[in-house]
Image 1 (cartoon, rainbow, N blue to C red):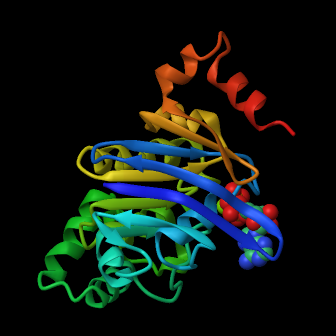
Image 2 (cartoon, helix red, strand yellow):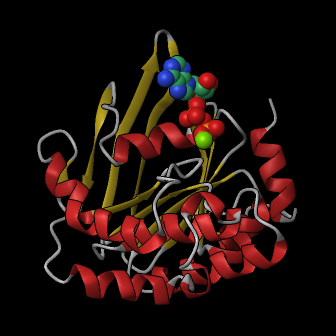
Length: 234
Ligand SMILES: Nc1ncnc2c1ncn2[C@@H]1O[C@H](COP(=O)(O)OP(=O)(O)O)[C@@H](O)[C@H]1O
Ligand SMILES: [Mg+2]
């Protein structure tokens, strides 16, 4: 279970997040949808213990981000925005390094499983810096999932991919989402329709809609694209 309770984040006097609350159950792939600057990355950094909230609390598998950040990190896999990777490393070398950070006992086996799951086999001879954007995203997903976390937090996992790459990455995320909690951010409605069962729309740091795609569609006569546009225009 992922529980976000009354999260507020102030940067100086700016409310990047203003009293955001929701919870997510296993097996749900939730799209955190909003225009640029809405607060999506800020919320993900708070959930993953990279920055503290100004107010509020998050619980990840019953562990508090404020009191038990180490336990939270063990339960969470995180693909940050812009997917920072060590470009001078080879894929297996990088994944082994990640596995060792988590002190995994079966690290060699987990590296092989992640390479298989994310379809990295054809590119094993290349350094990460030589990979296309699509393959770098696969490496980012492999590092996020290597310790088999219950919760995956993916910040714009599909931004900048070509249509074929998009299809492949969506498949990996949908497979992972069958047994895990997945929260992914995007500013593109089609991404939510392709992968998510539920959307949480935020604008200027506030939640403006939260529901299954069917519920959101029923809330008006518009299609989802129009609903998003209406809710997020200034
Ligand atoms: N470290 C920071 N210092 C000051 N303002 C920030 C910082 N990080 C983000 N912001 C501001 O907070 C708002 C939300 O940013 P962000 O969470 O990155 O939005 P999104 O990911 O939805 O595009 C933006 O107005 C952004 O400029
Ligand atoms: Mg962002």
